[in-house]
Amino acid sequence: MNIFVSNLSFKFDEGSLKELFQSYGEVNSCKIITDKFTGKSRGFGFVEMNNVAEGQKAIDALDGTEHDGRNISVSVAKERTENRDRNSGGGDRRRGNDKRW
Image (cartoon, rainbow, N blue to C red; front, side):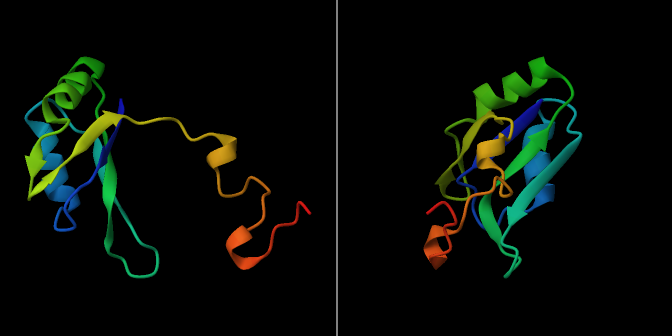
């Protein structure tokens, strides 16, 4: 089960995220998403747990709880779709580079 965790304190690292979830079951992996230019946390990440029941128990227990002064959001991660993929063929409107015109 892939779990999405958001509104994390920027002090959170992958070790603390893993520790938070380990009390609910075996954690296969965890990843804090970082800014590609600065390397700093973007305030969200993913936790992967093999056992769906343990993953759901962690979601139910941790969603909305306070950690490092922030109420975290925990939910089942949504699969990435083609429309959300960076290579979907659309232009970059922020730079006036929209090729659909």
